[in-house]
Length: 111
Image 1: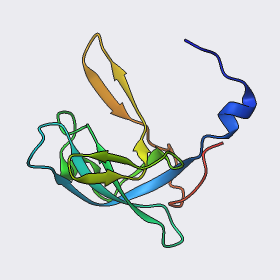
Image 2: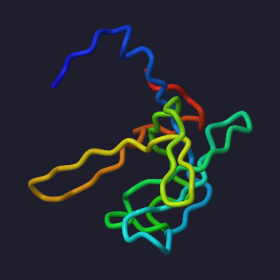
Image 3: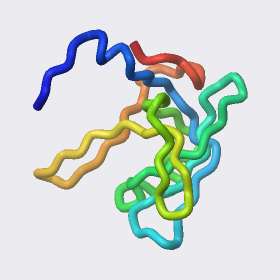
């Protein structure tokens, strides 16, 4: 894997977002469409390929870490405006979404 320097890393904006709406996308067996609150009236649509691992009830009204300064990406007919962060253990095929261990405000930056 290519190494990056601290200046490259500092370009990545990671914030805590609260999922305020979530639904399964009918045309896909892996995508969920999320509405995520990043505070200060910043509500974004995020598509995530976690439907095989998480149901809507597992993530609704919970806070997770997101990369928020990626270029928007089109998936099917929807646009994704951020990316949820998760780990994937290939040996056990387990996915775990990154979650703050304390209750912080939506929009809090991850440093």
